[in-house]
Amino acid sequence: MKLQALAALAAVLAAGCGTTPLQPVQLERVPQTILVLAPHNATDVPGADLACHARITQPLTEHGYWVVPVGRARELTSSLASRTDLTADEALRDQLHRASAADAILQVTVDAWDRDYLLFDDVATVGGRMRLVDATSGRELWAAGYGEKDSLFLGATIAGSAGGPTGLMFALMVAPPFALVSAISRDTEDRLATLAQRAFDRAIRGGLPPGPMQAQPGDREPAVEAR
Amino acid sequence: MVGSEVFARRAVGALLLACVAAACAAEPTRYDWTDYQLAMDTELLGRPADRVAAIARLEAHLAGADPGRIPPGERAWLAWLHLRAGSREAARRWLDAEVAAHPEATQAVMALRKELDS
Image (cartoon, rainbow over all chains, first blue to last red; front, side, top):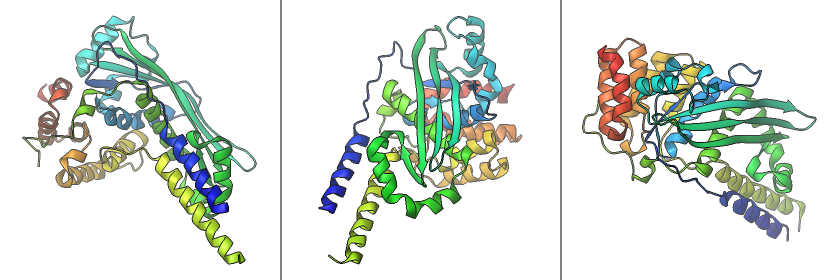
């Protein structure tokens, strides 16, 4: 009887995880390359912008876009650029386009970067906004919010997608064996950075159409390999 | 049913759930990000703060990895690291390799290369 209940719970979890709605918008022009500006940090936590910048390349690339190396992007821009309305500021947009040759420019704002400790709970939250602008025309191609909450209840992770009563039951059942491991291995910065990456991934997969490289079966073997 | 059997069944159930949850939490990735992500963390977050080691790791990864699992842009990132470390020739080689692997990014890579040629 209990095994049946466990199986049912597992099925609910699996179903909940597998039904992430994917409704990408139609872009006027799908860019191939993206320059991600240094994010604007609207929180009072130093370094939140750096962590976001370090973790956004993977979700964009996995979704089929070629991303200008973020080290280079940081040299070209400051966080002030992410606060600028690039649809209106043609001079800045043109300058960024000439320097990077990217088809589109992504502006990121970090609005939430928190970790709250409650009695038996440890809640991490990240969130903000993204805006993709065509580098030549200045038209806004896509805009979305991103956000993710992660709760370490007695050491077990309940991601937002597995939250609610099901997540709580799961936490109660598996928390003790994992509590010690979690307490030792997780630190705030890594946890929030990982959470930000997950939030970007979800927002990008859920709203941005796949980029040109998504359709390819894989990276081609380069004709000239620098070895 | 004896107590130990009940405990064992609960443990198996909990393990099953943990596996399901872990599978849900981790989106499958097409590329191998281990070294590229570590190199970005090194540069932006300073963890670990060792650019030379990051370059060596990326070189090793690119030398041995399945080309289909190398993230687009990893070679360009390595080129940028070489450029900042003062190795212009190595930077040039890796930019050429990036263009060869991802011709759709040619213009963006060439913009980076302009700095080399200037």
